[in-house]
Image (cartoon, rainbow, N blue to C red; front, side):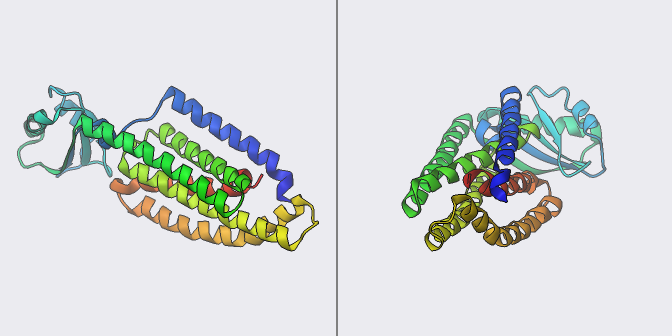
Length: 275
C-alpha cells in the first residue's frame, strides 16, 4: 500500500533537499558563460596532452583563466571573464602561448564565444523570470482544471524536483547556462505531466467509487497508473542515457541534469504530490 509508505518517502525527500540546500549554501551555483559574461575558446591539439601541460603553457597569459578538459585529452575549454573590447587580445595571447609551447600548427581553435556582462545579467534575470512564470502558470492551470489542493501538490512536487536538480548541479559543479535552464524547464513540464496523470485518475475514481476510504482510492489510482508511469520514464531515460553516453561534451551536462530531474519527477509524482 502506497499510503503506508508516504512518511518514508517524505522523510527521504526532506533528506535529499537538506543535502541540496547544504551544497547550495556551501558551494553555491556556478554560472556559465551565458550568465556571467566573458570569453570561451575551445582548443584541440593534434596529440593527446595532459591538462597540466596546457596550464603551464598558459601560465604567462595576463588574463585570469579557467581551463577544463573537454571530451578527454587533447581538447580543452579555456574561459575568462574578459571584457568584450579585449577579446582579440585574449585570443591572441592564448594562441601565442600555445604556439611557443607546442609549436605552430599543433592545435586548432574550434570555437570562440563571447558574452558581455550586461547581456549575461539580462539573460540571468530573464531565465529566472521564465522559471517562476512557468511554475505560476502551471499552478493556475491545475487549479482551474482540477482542484486547488491538486495544484498545490503538483507545485510542491515541482519545487522538490527543481531543488534536487539544483543540488545535483551544485554538487557536480555544473555551470548554469541557457542549456541547463532549458533542462530545468523540461524537467518542470515532465514532472507536472506525470503528476496530472495520477491526480486525474484519483479524481475519476473518487467519482466512481464514492464512499470508499480516501487511502484505498489513492492506492488503487497509483497502482492503475504505475505501468504507464514506468513505461514512460523507462523509454525517456533510455533516450537520455544515450545522449549522456554518446552525445559528447556539448550536451553531457544537459543530459545529466535531465537524468536526475526525470528520476526525481517520477518519484515525486507519487511520493510528494499525492500525499
